[in-house]
Image (cartoon, protein in one colour):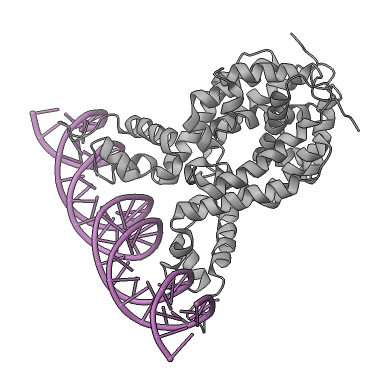
Length: 191
Length: 191
DNA sequence: AGGCAATCTTGTCAGTGTCAAGTTGATGGG
DNA sequence: CCCATCAACTTGACACTGACAAGATTGCCT
């Protein structure tokens, strides 16, 4: 990788993106260095900047890609619970994307491509509660469902629920967790 | 602040911690610079290192403080729902702590003080579901409750639910959200 | 064929974290 | 009262980083 025949790399943008995802998944976004990514791609230290402008630009591109992956992962899932399961699966399948997507201080918030991708994912999230019967406040219901899935995904990725899983896949555990919730086991005390 | 009579600062550790929290709350942990904190405290560039060893050490100290604040915020709350509300309030009252606590790649995971504080907070979280009647799997119920509160807090802090709040305080919104959940509005479709 | 624009390189600058070695001054034992 | 000791802070240095500017190379389009 580090030596190259041609002057042009050919696929530098994808190379850098892939390497960046590896680094972020392994050591977090803070460990990401444009110069290091350049070295891995066998390219001069300033080359990545031509594709992403900035460190922020690179992270913004990753976040945008993440929102599109999320939208694709949720698309065409009729049932709300299963949508939650897929949300969790997305987070575990693409931990680097997920991390970056929800760290706004790393991103250029007004980037058009980011906003467009975010809107596509947002539409999928809204669609999850759109068809629910007997829900007076669909928006709040949506936020409740999103909170549950997002919270579980986040806690899993930060290593806060490992013990409870007992070897099970996180998405499976989440499926049974929602079962517990929605059959009225948890409520108990209502004031 | 930037000029000083005495050679010793007197309270550098607290000064640096306070300044760090400001920076993190405003621009995120990535924007944090030890040299900048030193300048703000009117002290030489290597002074903070004497108190925190590292950038990682500083962030670890913040996380430990955060877990203790969380434990204190949760202590003595009998009802589970109200515990969730307090969790959300903690996150909004101490956004910098909250952010750092749940970014393990910024922390020294084996730090004794961090582990101790984390355990204190963890005990409070467990206590929340301990007294629940009719709950076969208390651990899973606890993770469900934690996921919901944590997810909502995270989504709020990342600016993903602003529109839905409509001016209300996030903790109030969360209270009504849990009401919606626990009165069986959301379940609807059960497969 | 020729020019144009995208891609990549080279060189440079200020800023950062971290380490090592020196200064200052508070504190407590003789 | 004095002085040794030690924590708190300073100074200086080094390697590394992101960012910018200016030049080299090459694919592509007319």
